[in-house]
Image (cartoon, rainbow, N blue to C red; front, side, top):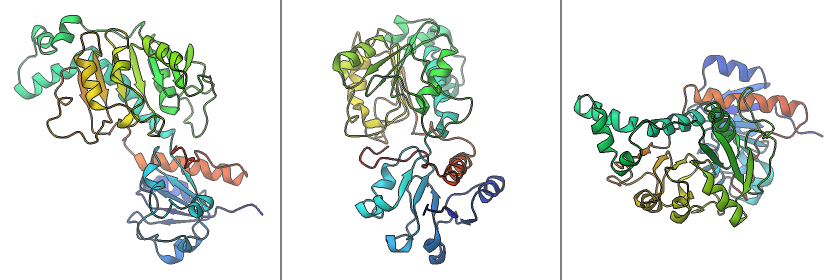
Length: 359
């Protein structure tokens, strides 16, 4: 007998319109944005829609949620939910499939990447700092001077046309990023574990991304040292959107950042433990090293007060906010709605996370 998915529990705040859409897809929707779910609702819940933390504190044992089969997160990352006390056991992982909302963040993260590469290319981070903190006209010569050695090397506005953008990891975020950079006449290359071209899987917003994986002109393997080094040597802009796994932790070294082409930018929107902050600083200070960096994630996170990355003239640091957008939980509810359609058709759920990999 096929499992049923009639009763959904929602523990995040939705707009009235989106909540009504969800109610059209499930027989019963228990709406508890305060995370206080009555025992009666726990007992019959089939599928949950929660924030990044997963099941709420009121769920203390599997006995309370005997029918729960799917936990739909509103986040792309599942590490926090998987490491929670309730979901860390083998028994829980056999009973409950944890699903991410990977795919919805194409609404914000790719445009964050493109806009901040352009910000660095135009030295806007320096111009805005002078104008806002001193209420003075940021004269061109002063902007170039404030940029230091990077300004001496590139005194004018830089342009994207003809640059090679390398996507480290080629999931939903990277595919939409590739599509946007392609519009600036950039060359696109990508690196993944196998170095192969693959179709896009999981939840996808129509009109976004790279469904058949055809945009990159070449793929490289991160598991092949020579292939990976060739990839890095071509990247005028290196964009990392990898999850945190044992394989990706400190995967990038200072030496590798220094091997990027002269004038390269490193962008990290995945997880901060891909590269140590001191290695980014070292590469930035190397005569032939990194030209600039855009960091929405850092190691450690948050960066300690007074860290030199905050004030480096060619670095933009943001507090892990690139994935936030207006109507965020409504966006994740669209994944929950898509799940309903698949489950009713007898298909496997979308975006199932492999606990051994963490994504």
